[in-house]
Amino acid sequence: MATENLSWSDHALTTLERAGHRKGGARLAVIGLLETQSCALNALEIEEGLKSSGVKVGRASIYRALEQLEELGLLRRLDVSKGTASYERIDPEGHHHHHIVCDECGKVVPFEDPKLELAISAVERSSDFDISGHEVILRGQCANC
Amino acid sequence: MATENLSWSDHALTTLERAGHRKGGARLAVIGLLETQSCALNALEIEEGLKSSGVKVGRASIYRALEQLEELGLLRRLDVSKGTASYERIDPEGHHHHHIVCDECGKVVPFEDPKLELAISAVERSSDFDISGHEVILRGQCANC
DNA sequence: ATGACTGCAAAGCCTTTGCACGCAA
DNA sequence: TTGCGTGCAAAGGCTTTGCAGTCAT
Image 1 (cartoon, rainbow over the protein chains, first blue to last red):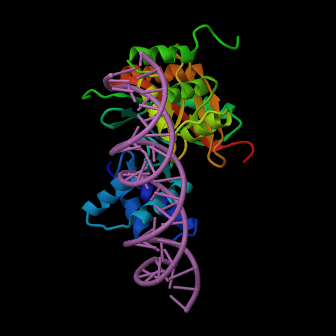
Image 2: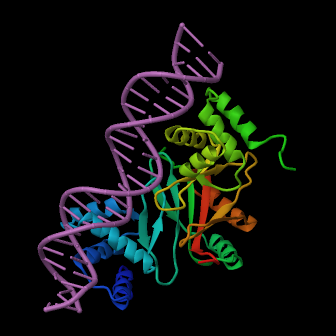
Image 3: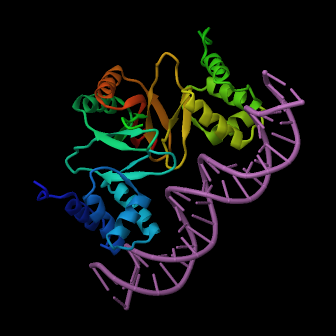
């Protein structure tokens, strides 16, 4: 139940290879870390996470890896807080969640809702954009604040 | 039909007064400009908009006004593009729209959808947060790109 | 008259870019 | 061997902060 046969990181590595990219250390490290996360992390959190597991990766390489993985459709970028972007895996099967953010402490809680997805799909179909994704953010105060 | 009896700027001025704030030039200028906008603007666009109508307002004052108006519940901050925040009026009666953003050219198009709002309201009620607002962003490529 | 508001400039923060070195293929 | 990937440091862009002068009350 823990690890599926077709993990996100497998999918990511395959996609990278198909796109003609090499498997450099920084890239692999970022993929390895995000594989274990259930919700979004920003670049500095990723840097710290890697450092605390003994892996030293240059900050610029992290940003470059994130940008690239996003362009390949492997990561979704979230603009949750003021000036910092967070990233989380995109499930190959399209399964995803959205976020509730506490304006006080910055806490982020994921949620999912089928009816919400249906309503968004309808909007996406009726627009004249070629939609690649969407993002829903609820803001407020969490129970602790 | 153009101007309603209870305009947003009237509401904003009243709210500012109740909160014990003075009606300084910069603040009034920002309120006056946002009153005329139907969608979100960022700080630099506001600065330019004011300058082109002959009003010179310091950039810092614009940021301070925007932050303050947001805290008073008069403006909603949107994190649409990478590192820049946009702001738009919050309708006192709760009427609002969401946004479709072109990843190529940055174009932003507003849309509204009652079913989407219903689905979001249901999620908001079932969460243990005290929700103050929400934000939906669809991303993709516009017809021109 | 008083202190809140404003404007300028400097500082801060996240992110991107330039460049030389190292490593994957 | 080749040139993509990486790391460091510098540069960039948006936003915030410090401070002195100004204006609303």
